Length: 589
Image (cartoon, rainbow, N blue to C red; front, side, top):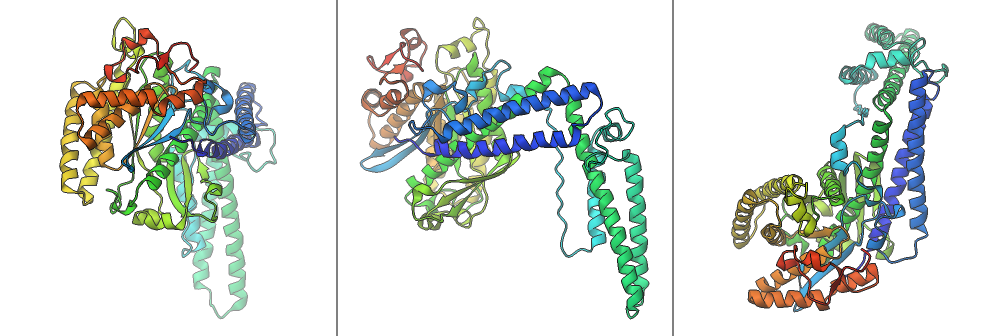
């Protein structure tokens, strides 16, 4: 078991990006709408700026804290509510399991993927998004082929803007409100970002410019190329007309951007909506930082623990590495919000994050840090590796192609709060957990189907995977929740056959996580050495008592003791109960 410097290196880079994104949004608002005359909208704008400044302050303080941090290379569980650690995963460790000097299991252990310092008054990110998806954005790609003439390029831009206008609800009213005499008229009339006229007038003017440009282009085709004077005069006229058209396009685009900002102001005039929006933005940035840290750590663990990467099941296919995040949180109280955070982020992750491996530019591997760039909706992570490791990668990865690992999130509550959530007396319900596990089953089923179609797996492996996924389907259909540990056992078996990495987590990453990890190590030992169930449970008890997981507890809370009470022991499944003398209820967590 060891710590990783990535626990702080990646969050530091992500904080810089979050600070940049938030500052840019504030500057855009100030540039485009600060001179607004409407008092109600101006009050909302002031509220926007206050929330943005608050988020900027949080990012700045977190950055300064991490730069000067001199503690261990992980976030202790006793610090899980500290705001300065918001972007850092809790208690992130890597653990490798060997039998006779042979690596038979690789695990990443961590606290919940959640923004714990931000609490859960309105639930986690999944629930916050369900309250209302309020963020709207304009994404104009100015992709113009170089082999096309200026007139063709002009038309492409024009068509893109018209498509955007047609897809933007209430765009005419928004631009008109910002123009002179409008409801939200801006005072700085000389600013480029201020709409000079209504949208209809701008479109009419643009159309006139296009008619003029097209007529000049048509006339140019009839000019005698031998007449230099007429040819030069025609080119000058076309150039002037083209510049006028581009100016109109530019001002139209700025008007649309200003209208987009105004629409955001109008959507968030309610103080609660505004607060939720910026809380969600801050929460998303923190979770994205933690998710990238976990994924990067898992990928590096896979690379450095595999003796022959070329022989991995997905190496000759378009299938990406498999990462399974199995958490043991209950659908009750704050942990319900933690589940929502983790589930929502992993569902978004594949659409927003891309990874690649690049050759290191340093002979000292400790100085090679991941490079992160992009936006919230498209973030790219370049992981440097020594040239000898690059050569061992599957073909696509060795060439630096972008990919995103397949990350599947499972959850199974096992403590007394999970019992409360499953009972009507407790006032909770397990519907979220059931939905998550059924979604995970569908994703794993699809992954396996693609893998089996495109890879040349060993026949024994294919038969084993088909048998296990069939058993998993039946198990989930009968009981997708309620401490059904058969789900955990089957998922771990499948993940191991498919050369995946297991990310095990609970609230702090040390108690329930330790029980799950040692249980899986015992299962691997039984499968490898052919021991009996009784011998397996004795070895698991020994691992929990004498193994490295108690050291993990000591590193976090100062004592080598798991945090369980005698009361909780009655609700834990037998497989999750620590040996006597290794747990107490009187330690911080």
